[in-house]
Image (cartoon, rainbow, N blue to C red; front, side):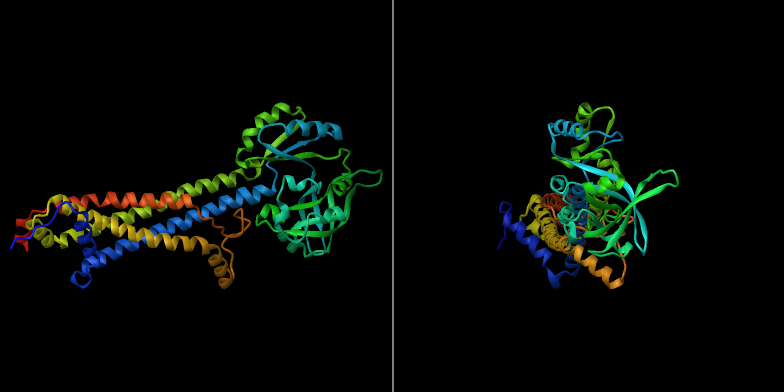
Length: 423
């Protein structure tokens, strides 16, 4: 009786590949090497997806939260311009393509003082009616609201970190000193007012939570004894990342006495560091996946050596070299598919739970992994991206298929007579 192995049916090579992977007790080496390869790919894919999600989270927090609170572009002047002059400038600015909204502001440096502590701060006097058009600060209140400023002329809004340092809560009082000193014939006098805390916000950024205080515009003008109705304009652009591209058009319509600064002057270096870190970390993690793929090459090569006798028998039964090659390509593809699937599941779970996990670890060990004085935010964000998942899956699939070529060709090149003689 003569047996014949069909070289045309793809199910034959796939069936044999599956049998090799699940060979169980018949070959401990094959099972072990397959398991090691799957584990390596699983960890590589899971870590890659999780870390990319964390970097996406940092990027999202910067773009949508921190850069949503600070003005995309600020126009200021040292001159005491009239309300009509500022209105003419605002009308010109709002016509520039990419500009969404313009709001007035009175902004000066000051010092807040309580019985517990004192801090230098940036005092921002806003028009509560239009501030929501250029800032999303009202989304970060943990007590009070922005509208409270319109009800209390001498109301003030502070960040959570600053409130803790000063030892004040909602309804407490703060002395706010102007940085400007009035000169009289007898002695210089500092201008100050007692303000009531009507709101507390928490953005999660050290610069904002610790140094920014908000009052209504009339109070700020009175405190700083400003002759101008306001000291500048806050501009919101359609795309915060393209704010610098609008600057040339803005400069053309502004008088020489005015200056414009974009958010990149304050947070640009931090944002660029995040983007650079993402590139470096992504490269290093892809190297990790590459090591796992190299491990797949070693595993398949050892499996080929372990299956020399089986390959020789298949060749004597009529299996062509292409069929042998397909068997091990299928085996590598199935191992890769198993690693990708399990890694994808772990990566998605890790991406969705990493923020809660880090918070739990901080609570258990009573420590802070992200210090707001060092990092732009004081918690670990995560944003799962379908685009990242697609590229990771596509990249690992291609890599898994490529690394199977060498062991598959070695298997196809085995000569039946030599292999059986060696046995």
